[in-house]
Length: 310
Image (cartoon, rainbow, N blue to C red; front, side):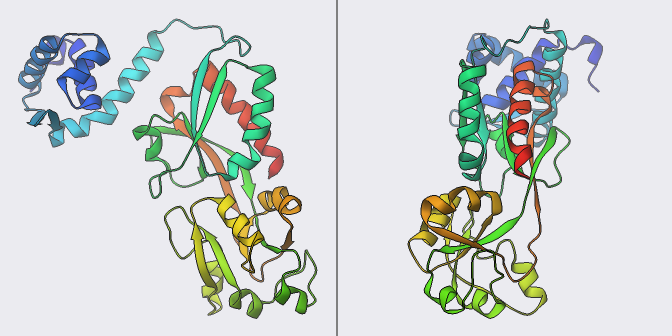
């Protein structure tokens, strides 16, 4: 059994660096030690923890299962200790120099980023914000694996290392180009419900970063034994509404986004023939940033912009 009382806690910083970097060179650069010092610390860790911890494969260190199990909890605890021992700093948005990476779909490029840009230019000119793509099938893990400060995603069950805040709800509407011949022949006006037969027969464009052929609304169609005709998928919302604007395809789109782009692109907005579940959108971030003053301030600005769009 390891004797925690005699363990040099500096070794845990070395272990964390090795787990994050996967090499003694990278770990040495990360924490400001020499490579021989990191190698010596690894030898001491192996003895103290009674586990080889890593296997060398070429220039890369492959962690054992024991080391892999330590990776996330150790990194989080060290970050919490660093926050605990750091002297409180005074945050002034007007003078802060900081970059933040936000993960989210291009829904937020339309509905958040323009307003946020105007606000930051006046209130926090030294803060840089980068909106980066979501990673399909792995939205939450994007925060840990790709150095993301916060993600804007539909609410799901989040892991215990994450904090979250609901920012807005989103309903869905149907879009078609102005003067769509089959909708015009049905004598329908914007705001009307599209009849189920016409809805299922027309070609649909589906937003799906993963390229799936099912999305919002398909479960409701399943319940009545119907199926729509999905002929195209797009990984971004702008691809969806641009395809609809230039063709006789139709699409379900978040209502606020549809309202934002309809006039500019010559689109009409209708109601789908079946109920489509409302989606709760939220911010999620790693708990180590929860009490960071600049991070807290940015979250508040984003929430203030998005809340009225529910």
